[in-house]
Image (cartoon, rainbow, N blue to C red):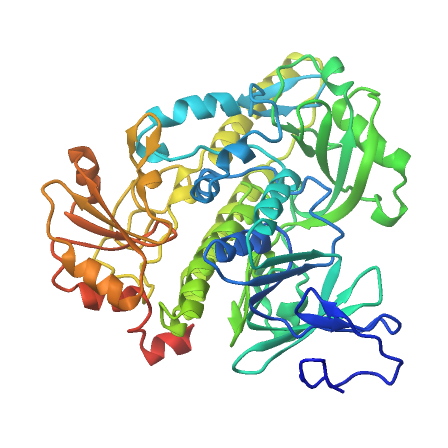
Length: 594
């Protein structure tokens, strides 16, 4: 059987066939429910969470054709992750929609404090104060040192972020976003990957071809399991809190703010011997993401709506009215990283390669970093600007950082989860007051340690990457609370505010940037080498002596992901440098190691 254009169709069941063009790229069988989609895409993505949607944006902005499948009917309904770190907001700024995201979630004057209570309506134990969205916007241009950044963190539920990422991805030509479709089969055919997707609520199926398939399909990733790739790490941590089965309730309770006599907070944590919980404010008007540790005798399958509400009321310490929007269980205590980030033309990212306990809010943010790192490399390889081998550097760079970040999250979970309430903590006695004061001091210090984390946020490094021209250096201690800006190649480019409205990052090109400081050193060699390689390069002259002092060299080459690839005092070796950063000099041993 042939299409009207002569293309041979194979594997079709012997039904009466009525054909019509499918989006001008394929054909559909009306009566049998089969679709043969002859479309060829550069990249197919399985999974439409933050990783998959961010990757679609990174690729689509670079003119790469993308088809994305996700089995959910739409973007997330549940709040899920609730903390967008500053580095992630810098990526959103680079794509042009950080202000759109900062306007979502909590009202702009809502405090983003982390507050600890015996019960929400009874006694406050301690509080770590953080700025509202409006205050963050006002303060960021004046901040320096560890917190010199183009953006500060934003407390917004993932459900809102995904909507923005989806809307911007769908607006890009060549990007096809398909919710309600599940990838059911794929085959790496060396030159491309065939991918079959099944409609979840119907009988249609699609088969497409792509140069690469990317599995961003979560912790139970079908793509990862089909590749035979396993997680490694800690999957069995047992703690009084943040270890084992957790019960999540997405609920609406406007009365909460009427019965709680304390200042509002973004993150609300209970500390007692009976009902430990953490609860993020979702909209600032009574919607909450409530999570509690299941206790002995609480069997998730038997919990009724009424019993779920009593969990919440026990944490509040008052019979508050509430409406359940959704509920379910999850497991805390994971610190897992995949043994490999893919095989051949099939790669993985996000939760498919790392599972976190959510302490510190690192899982979603690490996933966005994965997408940014992989996006520019895939695009450069597909366009022929970079060697195809550059894609191998994705695992080399990102896997160690996943191990790093899951380790930090595990430490935060240990800090809060292994600290237990002493008998008498809630008693209205002098001893109870002393115990509450002791607990409050500990918990406030923990809150600062878990949420004041510029070192984690900005400190990821790629020193061992084959596409970084690394320098001999004595590594600084990798601490969560301290970030020392350095232009040593392999880390985030040091940030500086040119003026109150202009971040240094705003001057960077979307692809490669060559920074030239002070009395300009000739850069013609880089311009010529980049042109010869097809590399899009923006040359930016910086007159500020303060910025030049940060970079400690007259020239610095910045990657598309705002990582320093090289710095030096001459363009004499520009062809060698360009070839290196584009993966054209990766050795065989480096490729095998990846």
